[in-house]
Amino acid sequence: MPLRLGHTKSRHGCARCKQRRVKCDELAPCQHCARRKEDCSLVHDRDSRSSSRAQTEHSSSRINKSSFFSHLVTESSLLDQPNEATWGEDLFLMAHFVSSTARTISPRNEVLQLWQTVIPEEAISCSFLFHGMLAFSAMHLAGLRPLQREHYEQCCRRHQNKAIPDYRQAIQNMKVEESGQVFAMASLVILLTLATVSDNALAQEDTSAGNKPSVADIVSIFTTVKGLEAILNNDSPTRHAVINSPYEAAMTGHTIADAQNFDLPVNVQLRYRELTTSCLDSLLPGKESAKQTCREAVNLLQGIHRELLFLVSKQDYNAKVDLNPAYLVKWFALVSAEFITMLRQNNTAALIIVGEFFALMTLLDGSWFAKNTSGNALKAIQKVIEPQGLNWLRTIHAADRVTVLEYD
Picture (cartoon, rainbow, N blue to C red):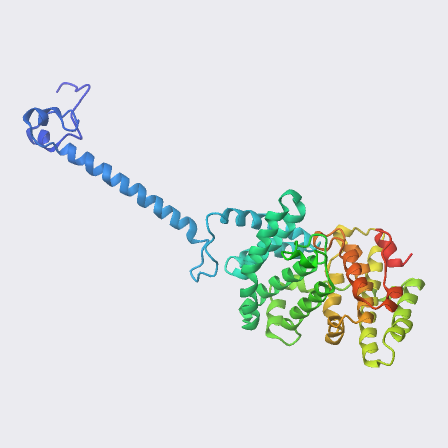
């Protein structure tokens, strides 16, 4: 049998050419069908394939988009569907939080890892935490980018407005399984509230009262921190749930144990002694209960002062590595409810003590959320205290942080 070279038998010819066993040119219609004026099956196949391809591409596109978004939207619809105008920016805000803002919360690596890994993942299914993180990130960017400050302030307000209602509801209907998320959000709220007294505070939408921090802003820090303390009281299931979770890292390490035997300089000891005696005697004559409340607040502050001075006195001290904002902020939680009541009443003696605390806050001036809180708070206090209290109000003359601690 001769070798067949260049075999050209049609494999995809029309049905009629196959029946006749003739070669089909595979055009649509083919030459034979056109000449005979017969219906060519290739015409129907082409139209069918074209229609099928279009439907398949459309369907494939729809399926791909659906699968892409399916893991971003929870079945329980806990997260609002972001509109097309903001979802990209929200993605940027979260990326900025993880890469940059989280690093400003604490110098401790274990806490940083918590904010960079555990908490962002939890925020996917927790609306108030998700928006709380974006609000904090936007506020950070407002300070970093002066030319876009107004835009990022608007972003911050938008996400705060979305976060706070759900957060309040979560607190009112506390569930053990949400303990970590509530704790994380409470921590952000504390820092956001602290920032209202800083130079990075959001501009007031109502400028009739000015745009400077007030004593009311200071008091709100105390009430916010106290709110977290109430959630995490010693016997609560919430506290146990947080301690037995990765969030434990953020609840520990707020005390410098080695500082307990550290002696404060004589002039510092004298200042605290005068505050608990001469100052209170002159500002709270005959009010023993109020004096005792203030003494307790001063004693707590003196303990924190001792820890801080011990810390900065270390030879290898590095503020960016060693100074945890929690060392200072914990005082807001330690003072009594009676002391906060005195603050709400603009009590001069209580405000003098708060001024003493904010003088120490100069240590955190390097933190964007605490920038110049000391100067702003002292100015706000100066405006409302009685004239006889002005001589007792602490003043800040230098930016040297160790000098602030040593009263030089």
